[in-house]
Length: 319
Length: 319
Image (tube, rainbow over all chains, first blue to last red; front, side, top):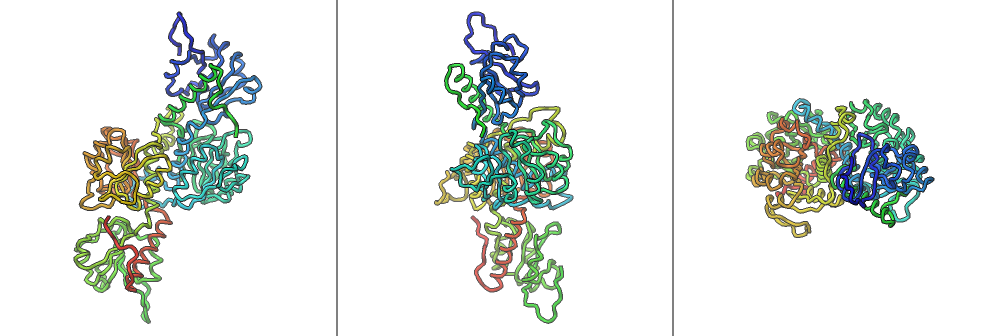
């Protein structure tokens, strides 16, 4: 990713694109107008670079930062930043930005898509038709009605709020859990996820992954959700105790799951492949061209603000 | 389906369950409390039966009616009644009921489920994960953002209205076509489907199948919809010229389709099985337990009204 050589003068600030080999920043070409890009910690530019774009969930560790003594800004390209050592950034005086609300609508759409798909068995029905079983087997097992379902939203940030808005239009009721009750929100609040699960037909997991929320969906919560309950996860894989979830699904102890994220991506527990009450998705919730446009804009805006000493557009704040 | 013999007295009115061998009326047991049921046109009861329940899309033809000289009521178990010879019923003075609005919400939910599934590629992504391709292939092709999409609803009856309500919550805009402009509706009206297609990203087909609406989605409409356009059909297969649709899909001349109904069910054109931009569903849109409950209630209510000479609950009225 060498930039064009321009010996005369090049005022574009230097920016490191920090990414695992399998991750690419969408629409990266647009950045070249504004910034000189490089992508290796081993580059001679590493010692002087002041800003880094972290692609996807590429880890930013203390060791990463050790290569970058001049770094003052980490620009995340996702909403959650559990892959960034935030404490270490804070200690070193490095600012961190995320994508703010840029992708909330896309993620909320996808959460509802997974919910409808699991409850109405769309993907499983598509499999049934494609395998040629319809003429042989005749009728297909029933799904569940969406209206009247009690939706429990785990993490009512901008994604969770968009999910709620959509599901209310289907006649669902909404309640939520988050670290604190939100004074401006009228949906019922549950101070812990277990109580929310007891009172929900579907849990939608869309909170940030932190030390406190790791495995927030555990055996107790799944038991409370029960045999007729469903889990949708569009947050991070490690919000759910995946081993337990697999056990509950295999043994029919919860009703089903729609999963866009997994604990050990891109590896998905093989036991799930045989189940028709599960929809499996390769971390797609933000993936639309519009979303990548919005992503690019917020990344560029944060970098421009930084290099002209203006306030950052979306400094990362934990809920 | 012989009813218990009760020589002493049995005041339950006689009702014919008219069904193709592959169709069963869900929750049929409940009817036995109220009615004496039989299910063969060859039965000696056929000559005296006054009411018939038509299961699913079992045809009610002039020939069917010839077996039933005393018939005065056909109770449909679906919203659309294109399988019933309505003109012949009218000529013979036979009243006809459908399910009214009993299933509108379920069908609308399913239309939105198909739309989200096709545009965000949920079923295709699930297939991708289950086939083990994620670790090998890495990133998955992008879907489309839902917000901002221009939705064209073909047939703004109770199903279409419920679809509109849901999609507005996703930030979509809505327009519609129907036989007549609806004075109480604020969405833009197009007098023909072609113009609606020109101005839509997604067409949702949910009108009744009649002589006028047969193949309402034809080659011209598909051309007007264009390469980035999508079709969702939760009405009847024959609303769409299926041969043309298959050609358009195979040649990439429209963006994709979500199809719950087909022209020759349960047969689905095999060419569609290879396409990832198509979701195929075995006529499931009404299929939830709650829907079957509602169905049963409206069937029983219509029959009870008929046998006590009260106004029918949901006489069939063509839009």
